Image (tube, rainbow, N blue to C red; front, top):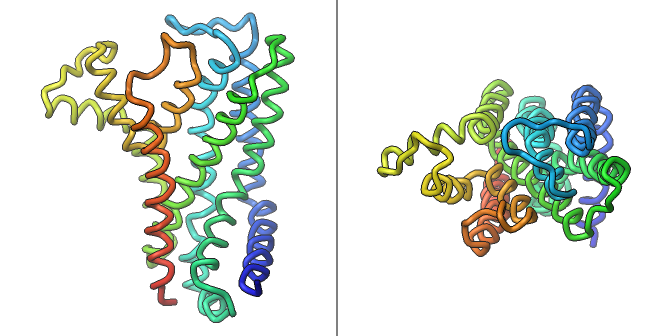
Length: 277
């Protein structure tokens, strides 16, 4: 009980300091522009989209806006969390924290949740407001299942990135190494994963010259299971009309969600328990 109260106090203190930090002040306008802004654009009946993309309901708007979530919210987690452990270690604050009468696992969770919730809470609020935008623009009310899936899987995505960033921060000996690892990880999954998929497909003998080929699409969907961004979009794609849903088995998607939730957090907590200030 005492450990729980200390955990709650540490978490609230961490949340307050992070949510009013200069980084978050800069991030808030970016989140507003990218999340409600993209939803407003995609849900506008007069919007003209390129290629064969068409809006077939609220779930399509949520799926298309996921790209803008990936470009803004995930980067926000990296920027907020890159020095969560490395900076206190350099300043000596970590020594004081580790001396507190609290279980190290709970202390590790307080650091992780502080980074995660400082971004996840405003993102969730913006997503909820975006649901109202969809209703206003399209004249339809998004289903409860679609809404919960969109908000819930986005929160999980941010937790995955927070876990990866906390691992980087616990491994780094200086702030530069921590932010470099975090940004590099973000760039790999957000900007370069398609290139990685094409290279691996070519090595394995899959024709990657035509990315619209059904064989390559199936390969890409399976490769996306090893990327947090890919899993995120596969879950949202499952809410689209039948013709647009992924071909990969739902069980693999569910397993990937569990894996990306459990494995990074477990590894981070293991490192934190053995951490030396």
